[in-house]
Length: 459
Image 1: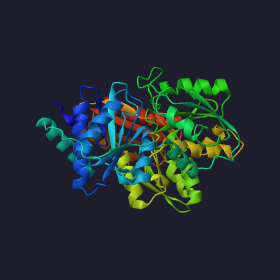
Image 2: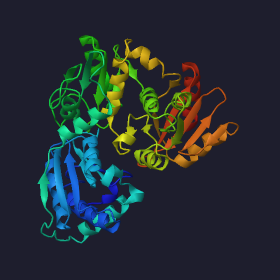
Image 3: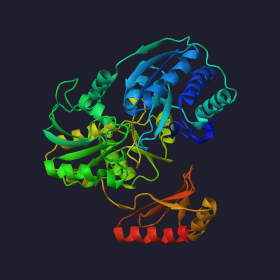
Image 4: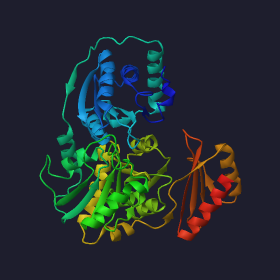
């Protein structure tokens, strides 16, 4: 019998196919989603659904939509799509949505990202726990699936999605740019030709050099997880080989985008956050910008310098989206290359962030290395994971060690130092790990602090 507590995570559903996530589980989750929408007053009469390129997607979607329709709710099946295409559909149609994807996870995984109408997130505290409990009950009692009462419609959304993004950032007047795009055999291979190429809309002054655009959920070339440096190697080599102006790498469901310059050097997501923030503030003077607490300290500094109001929040899209809604922020960014836009229903879209980078580069004559350097002020460690037996005890030990310094516990433990350095140590919600991030004005100071904390954590 399936134990849904193993696959229904804090923000989404994710598990291996078919042992954890299969058609009966998807069907139960579809029924539970429909019932929960009705119970919460979020039922709009129709749910929109899409899936990524994984082989298991279509059969899981069918089972899920059968479950939704069994509850008398209609379904619009958008077919293949990126996660931000599903958010677009949810936003523009005003409907709850379900995206079948396991993002950057390996081929044996699949999952579901759920949202209310207008791409509002569904998380543990906002309905996902209730969905899990109801679906588990349906599975445990072997409840028979009623005959479908809702209708189903297939609707192509790619062209409308691409046209909408083109209205948000005008690339038609930029200087010509050569761009290598590594789709990692994920959904970027489907959306990039439509948005940045000429597959459905007039051509832009961009020469796209495609890398791994063939949709293949077995990921034959490398994992579609650009957060891992090894998965950027092919992009970096191709950028140099083609003499390109920059490179873009998308994850499996293409909701995250990573950037490298003409030399193949990564541009940090914090620098991209600061760059996009300045562009949004130019359009919306004095606006609020959200950043999570492990983005670079340069982000709030630059936001203030450009007249904006930075708001610091916990790591995780549900926290960013909640702050976006509460504050009316125009933009939010995370260290993990998730970028959120008020103009996109507060949802995350790597494609729109990429378009801002292309616009910023194409509106001036210098290379991306010079442009990006304006937003890089500190040295960061990157996230370092340590397996520990007792997360609470180790956090307490580090807290005591730095008792004389400024501390806060917005998300884990953050220690700030007078020289501008900071340390954040957070416990994983799903694994016996502590996650360390360190930033400092110099590489030497960063290394010193990193090693000091790791000595305490790893003992």
